[in-house]
Length: 402
Image 1 (tube, rainbow, N blue to C red):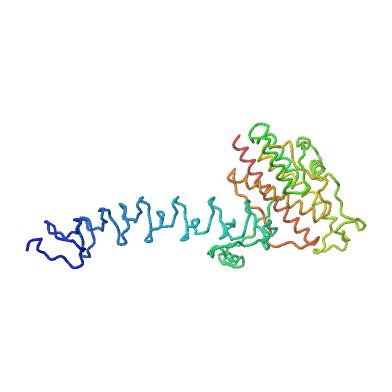
Image 2 (cartoon, rainbow, N blue to C red):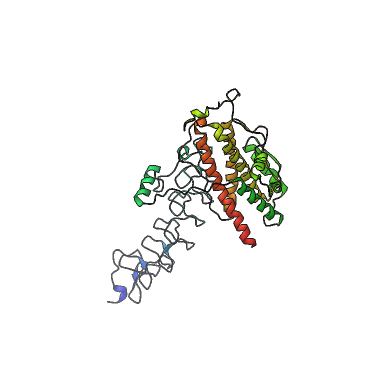
C-alpha cells in the first residue's frame, strides 16, 4: 500500500498525514509519535518552532533541563530556580513560594541578607528581635538587659526556632554543653596602653582621621543618646609613665568623688549597714570603688572606640555635672554608654572582618540595690567583650605595618 494510502491514526492531530518517506507528520510537517505529539528525529518532544520541550510543554536546554524563554532554569510550575533547584527571583536571589527573600536554610531575610520576621523586623538565629548591632530587644523595642526579657519576633515556623529549653536539651543530648570561658578582666592600665598606642597610630597615619563634620555628628549622637556625657579635650600622654595611672584616669572620668550615700543623705537609695549586708542587700560601700573603676573603663572604651573609628584621640567623652551620684541611676548611665560603645565596636568589627557578639546575661537582675552587683558583673563581661575586639583591631593594624 503506498504511503499516502495508509490510514491516519485516530489520535493524530487534525491535518496529519504520511509524508513521502512514510513518516506520520502533522500539518506543519513535523514528525509525530504514537501519541500524536510532535518529535524531532531523535524522538524528543518539540514545539511548533522545533525547540525541544518536556511533557509539560516547557522548553529544555541542551542538558534536558526546563528553562524559560530567556534560557533560565525553571521548575515544573514555571518558577525560576537555581542550579540546586531552589526558588529564585529575577535577580537570582533565593525566595520562598510567596516570593519573599530567604537564605539557604529558608529563613526570611532582607535585601542586606539579615534575618527578619514576617513584619520585616531584624531577628537573630533564635528569632529574637535585635537592633542593628545584633543586640536583643525587649517588648518595648529597647536593648534587652538579659535573655529572659528578650522579645521574639513575628517569625515563620522554622526548625531553627527551638524554644530555649528544647535547644538546651538538644545540646545536652549531643554532649555539646560546655560552660563558656570567663572573659579576662580588663584593667584601666590595659585600656590606657591601647589608647596611647592608638594615638601613635593616628599620628603616623596608620589610623585615618575622619573629617571634622563626622566628629561633630559623633558628638551629637552620643549627646542625644546618653545623658550626663559631654565632649571635652583629653590628654592621653599625661597618663604615661605615671605610677598612679589608674587613679589619674579615674580623676578624669570620675571628676567628683562619688561616695556611698550616708543614712542622713537625701537619696532614693539608703546605704545599708555593712554588717547587715547579704546577697540580697549588698554593701554599697564595697561596691562603690568597683563602680568607680568600671565607670573609668566604660568611658575609656567609649573614647577608644571613637579613636579607632574616627582617628580622633584629642577629644573624648567625660561625665558632666548631670552624671548621677545615685547608684542605680549611675548604673543605668554606664549601661547606656556601654550600648554606644557596642554599636561602634560592631561597625569596627565588620570593617576589620572580626567577630563580635555583645554579652547578654541569661536572667534579669533583681530590682533595686539587690540587683546592683549582678548588673556590675554583667557590665564587666560586656567591657571584656568590647575590649577583646578592640585589642584584635589594634593587633591587625600592628601586623599590617610590621
